[in-house]
Image (cartoon, rainbow over all chains, first blue to last red):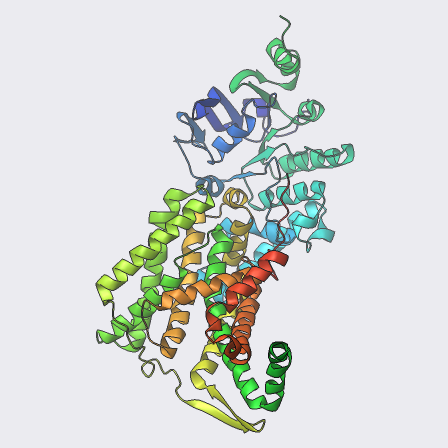
Length: 267
Length: 318
């Protein structure tokens, strides 16, 4: 459990996003059934569960990739039955992917610049000329992106096409691209999968820093229980598409249903 | 023995003996190559952004040219007609996105490919209904396209450069350079490349696929219009033009489906190769070689370098 930070009491904070009775199925397969939980402003919320529990499906519902058949989602006070990914991004939801979805042919810098897409709105015409307002805009956003590059300590690789980078660095660039969107809610799908201990420690520190410095609310899926217990304020546990527990890391650790789900039940 | 001499020695002797004819053939080949490259460019734009091989690119060339000529024949001022045609190409891009691409999103590529066949036949039918099926003449004067030729007496003979061909080469170069800058330096260009690399990642940063598709199809429409103007000015504007679009296929196999420079180099190689082969080796086999030469080259490439000269090597994980 994290040491309590100064500032608003997270445990009693405002709800940023609420998921209510969401069910999602693909054909006859039920990926998520009747799940409800909330994410409060400023917290780090972990979503855990065994393989196939519906964790990634849940993230896909939150950022609009999947449209649930039942239930509703309230984000910043607005309730919606479904939303398109573009609207989610525009509303301040950014994410990274389990298997790293970067623009592989583009440099690290261009990848992160792509995260600024929604913040840049000078007209097509000016961009075509690369002159006047569009040029000025490009320069301003470049400055913001350089800040993020400094923050993530990836200065040396900014000109390298990301397809050539090692996995750990790709994950960092992907986080950079999500940060470039200046999100209110950051969804991280297994940010430390496949990393060695040192890389995990770096990534953990970045996640905590993002949360502290920018006040970004974070929801993350992670399999490394040590990391989950250290980082998160609250944990929700899914199994076979259903919610089986919800609470602080300490409560989760001693929850019998969770232990059964992970270790199996004696028959 | 004589046959071998005719194939391997004689053509080169001819080239050396009449350098003016050789230069003329080279130039003709380059000009044809520029036009092939333009057509291939339209394909590459759409393939890069959506992974769809757009069978309708050929008919878009015809449709754009027909619209332009049709509007001009209806008595409109040439530049008004041009502006309206550009508007029509935008409406076409918008409609294709709404009516064809959006309902088929996430379907397998082959389905989108078949859908472009559908677009082809709709455009043929619509074009014939509105403009009639007769060949039309491109009003070159009204568009200030240059006429005549520059003749150089050199290399022991003379070489002719059609001014129209020179104009086509210049316009094509400007357009390609413009597209290159646009792709690499602007937000929308970056978004286009992003969409080409990963649809889901592009969606997650808030790039709107719908918007990108409209822009890409519109850009391909503009390329089609320019191609149609220059090709139409050399022959005439008719539905037969659609067939030349098939020549883009060998160009793409040579250059790689995802590479803009590849489309240009591929187009030039095919154009040059075709004309040289027809001129020097064609008589040996009764002429008409330019109908198949490009496809044979493509076949050779498919055997030895299937990703093309500039295409990305595809390594599948299994």
